[in-house]
Image (cartoon, rainbow, N blue to C red; front, side):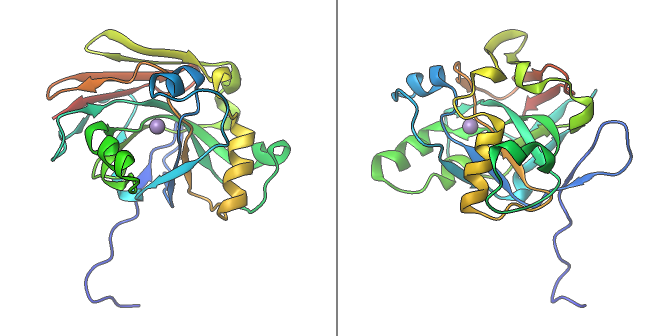
Length: 231
Ligand code: MN
């Protein structure tokens, strides 16, 4: 097949222990999925999960042992970090039940749902889409993917983020309002999941701004940590 210009390269993420990379199809994100974060954003209680997407090419790969770089984005003065567990889908499907969700998971990674909070808030006030606040270039840093079998008991893991060595976010995956199986059940009822889909599962409390030069280090027990410098 020929094209009128060269097609974009496939976005991919390294996998721990093997040379083959994980090719990215779509990036789904879950909104407000930890109670303490929902409260800090002005909401309470368990609402049905809701989703937004980022384009696949917003990925910034942060391979284990390296410091990745994310340019400070345009049009914001309030760039927020959101540390998140990322679920990597290896087998697609529709209407997957929570009980069957594990068989669709390839592995897990540490991710950052970087957010132009000022622009997101403007869009929220106007009832407009969040794209400009959430789906901008370089907005989806991700660490090396750990295959599920090597990741240990992810539902019992801690999740944390430091900025310049100071802790900003810390919680446990068990604190997710909608757990991994429930997320996959809800998501696959609305979209047909495909191999290569990534799901950013939501952030715990403590979101705040970063500036040019800041170094972010994030982790989830059992997974490769992520290190990222802004600028
Ligand atoms: Mn998020």
